[in-house]
Each structure stands twice: as C-alpha cells, then as structure tokens.
Image (cartoon, rainbow, N blue to C red; front, side, top):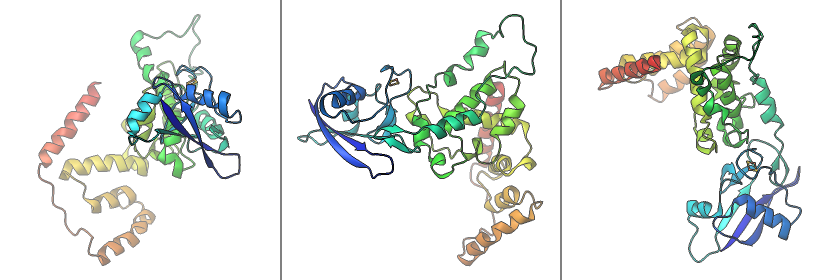
Length: 328
Ligand code: FES
C-alpha cells in the first residue's frame, strides 16, 4: 500500500517545514522501518535517533500522528486505523520531533533538560547510612516486586514530551524523573527516604507541580504510569506532614476535609484555610481580596453554603477509600 509520510523537518534556529515522502509499505512495517527506508532510498539527510529497533533502548521516541510514541513499536496498520484516513486518498502519517525539548535537527531533540531533571531527583539507591553487608544487599521477592513497574522505564522521553506542567513550568522536573523518584522511595534498601520526600515536596518542582492531566500515563509505551507514581509519592508525603506545613499539603488535606463535611467544597472556607492558613497568613489572605471583590461586584461571591445531597454517601466513600489505602 502507498502511504505519504509527512515529516516535520528543521535545522537549529530555522523554521520547521513539512516534507512529504511517498512510500510503498506493508501495514506490518514499523514506523522506524519506514523512516529507515526514506533515509536509505530517498533522502539521506533525514535525521532521527534509533538503536535497538525492539522497544528496549528508548532512542526512537517521536511524535507520530500527534502523540509521542516509539517508532519501532508502532506500525503503519495501527496508525492508519487510529486516524481513519478518508477513503480514496493516499493515507498519511505525520511524524514530528518530541515536544518540550529544542530541536537539534529534524526528529533529533536536545535532551539535556530531560537528563538534568532526572539527576535532580538523585536516582540512585543510597545505602550511605547503613552498614555494608559482607555480601550483597538482599531483597525478598515481594520487596523486589514493588520496583517492577517503575523499573520498566526506558527513558524514552515520551511522557516528558507530552507533559503540560513541564510546558508552562520550567522548574517542574517532569514525570520521568518523578516515576524514578518513586522507584527510590519504594526501594527498601535506600536509606534517604526522608530527605527524598522533602526534596520531592518542594515548591512546584516536585510532585505538587504535576497538573494531573494524565498524558504521561496515556503515552508511556512501557506502562510505567508516571502519574500513578507521583500520586504514591504524594500519599507518602501527606502521611508524614501536617496541613500547617505548606500550602500544597493544606490544599490536599483541606479539600478532603471540606468534601467530607459538605459533600462538595465550600469555596469561602477553602480560600481562608488553604491560602490564608486559617488566618495565620495575612499576606495570603490579602492576596485573595482582589478576587473576592471582583466576585462580589459580579454577584458571584457565595454568601452561604448548602451541603450537597448525599453528603453521607460521599463521606463513607472517602472513608472506604482511606481504609483500603491503609490496608494496602
Ligand atoms: Fe530502541 Fe526504538 S530503537 S526503543
């Protein structure tokens, strides 16, 4: 079958252009097979990364038809089925470089920020505070199984490329780094858990910078589910911290308390408790004044609060989830 490959091509500091390459392919051909043939048969100047050709090394991540994926994992048939090209036209597949990283050439991006952010979570097991045993540090199969999911990460950058938080917040370390961070927290041989949790709790560079858009989980080719790992770190932090410790902690704890009390959020209480720290943070409270005044002027300030119907059910659901979490 004939397929048009529309490839976004770019030199450093120059505008991107779309070049189209017509290729005779089989639906079982991987996207990487097709890129190789374009390079070998039509245009030797096309640049892209590859290595293992087998979903192991993570080198060939790129945006295929609008979402980040591994070129050696996706094939022509599944891409065309996903896009439902109009009949009678030559089907098209669009290939672009990963997002959130500057392009070096064509589909090759500069991954320096990706690796620097990984380094920022100290992705190594620390046994500094423990006696070194005569032989190796042993783990039970159960302890080892805690690391299975995060251990599958091949550092391809697909999650980082799609991360909305990373796009707007250059401090945020990204889902790949926080998935690795959880791998360290879950590793019972590590002796730095308390320091790690402090580090991952800081400002919006760690777990509180995540906007929970779920794109990282959606595109991860290895089912590492970075958002799930970020959530587990949050749970660890919340179980060790008080609401007074930081606005991020208060945000989560107050939200649950208010929903438990009224079935939904009493916005007035939420602002006073989270931003105003229960009237202890006057500067925080004052920062809410312009918004409050605008809401009053537009008649949108809630003067009273009505608990929602079914508050009892909401409360028992929250209790049930907490109990289940405690039992895990
Ligand atoms: Fe190694 Fe695709 S070439 S993961």
